[in-house]
Length: 318
Image 1 (tube, rainbow, N blue to C red):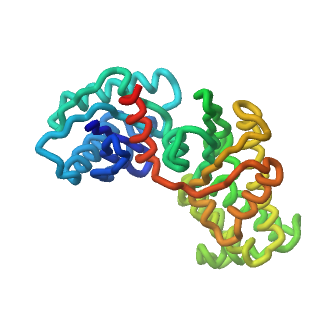
Image 2 (image 1 turned 90 degrees about the vertical axis):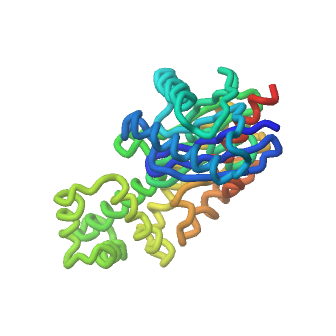
Image 3 (image 1 turned 135 degrees about the horizontal axis):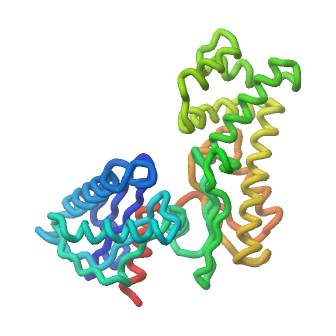
């Protein structure tokens, strides 16, 4: 029996799934972050090593387990130079004291961006499109020939349309314009005041600038816009509709690049934006299906680490 490791490494945590060739997860564990672009390769290595060790221990197979393949889907791994860095990490893993008998060949080591494993895990196969809309946003597709297309993922300054961050920023902009009298009245003004316990909306300056809020703190304000939209606020609903339009446009770009307009596809949606109360998921699905009738919009069937495990298993069946 073949055993493989699927690694999902992101900016907040690392997940490892130990799987067999029947696609069963025998052990699973989480550890710290592993986006080496932001935290460095040493911390990334420690997180991945810890996740692997704990996943193997959780499986209770034997003192040592034979690992025939590994897939690491890591945030920030997009370029050839990134892949070489992670290859060095895999080599170091094999030299460390893990309860593993490594049986890896170069063909059995898969290193990719976390968007691919989100697609494979979400759908259960490596064909389709994933639209991730959380703090940031990215759309990624792969067709039957193995051709891929990425749209977005450029970060909060250069892109991330449809993300929680951009929704929150648009909401605060609208509230301040309403306060100035430049735009129509909106409940977003009171919404942000209540959510942040502000005496006046002008105190947003102190919150956002003087507290040096980062992307995650600002993105966490997106539910204020969501709640206002769910309550019928016109301005908030325009913001949500604009987010939907951007994500549909991104998917259209992927379809134009590697699929056809009549392709039968599944689109998996991941990220915090889709859990909103304003029915953004339903609005997105309706808009997309109206344009591409053969598309089925779904929530993830499995987690990204499982998708990484499936990609690792593929290498053992060649």
